Length: 161
Length: 121
Image 1: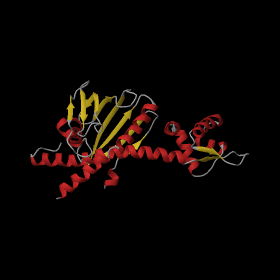
Image 2: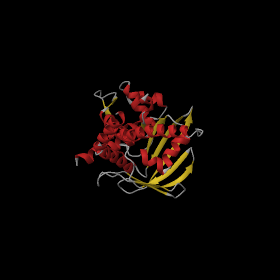
Image 3: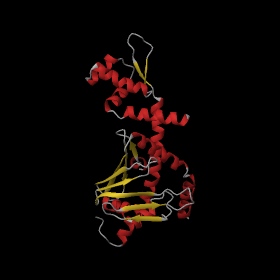
Image 4: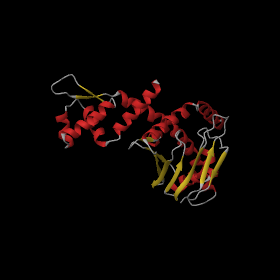
């Protein structure tokens, strides 16, 4: 089960990263989970700690800002601007999270089959250097997140009691 | 310095892999060494085109020339592919952790909707 569902990452061109992942929910629910602040705040942090800041202005050129809790230096704000909103099928936004500050475009496509949703996330960078920097940055973030792992683990223990 | 070199090498490998013909050439070489004329057949490409692709693959360290000086067969070098794999795998894990959290939350959302008796679509 976990295996068939796990995320796939490909680099179909020099500037792009594509991530696909299936979810056990209709796409209206998955789309809401990505676009309503009260929902995003509850899952964006992998440790499932509610976000410290979660602002969503869901309209073309509206901004969003997600900031997780945690000590200074462990916070990873994710900010950007919505460009295209077509509920519950498609969401396009731009961010400047790459180290060069260049803009990248994120396109989320939600497709539903038999009550399950496949999310296809395309991240298009301005150059191959930006794309590679983004991949590398995520590794750095990933390794600095061991504390989050512990958090998640403790959370599971709590729930099992 | 060493890290920069590593990143450069990875970038070259990524760039080499971005082209579908070059990926197909690598797939062909994975099943055994081949020289330029052997590579021309399945791809219906001219000799200069194949040579150009091979040069890119060689610069990326994905392909090496075999010992036979006459045939000059090309052979696949798997090491850079492994580094790319590791890189993408870390990235995948980063998102997978977020998605696992989303899985949990989607369950909660659907439970709440059901208990409120709202239709699911």
